[in-house]
Image (cartoon, rainbow, N blue to C red):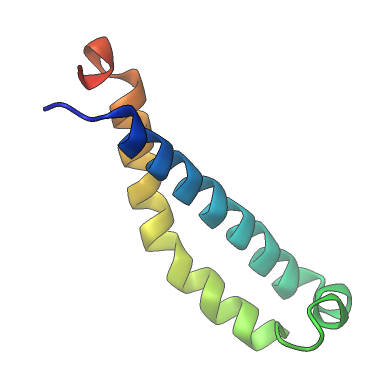
Length: 77
């Protein structure tokens, strides 16, 4: 299976984006009194929780893809 460098970069950037979103929504759950005003009321505790739960599946898939493509023999050609 050949995977181009462009596809690896796309996966890496998606993973970075999902990581930032997970941290932001996690803070929105635990530190909602800070995050809600910073997001101008768009991200309250309830919405943060919903988004946080929904992001775990895609995040785990991206982590597995990222690890698989970057630690396998010859970096998958």
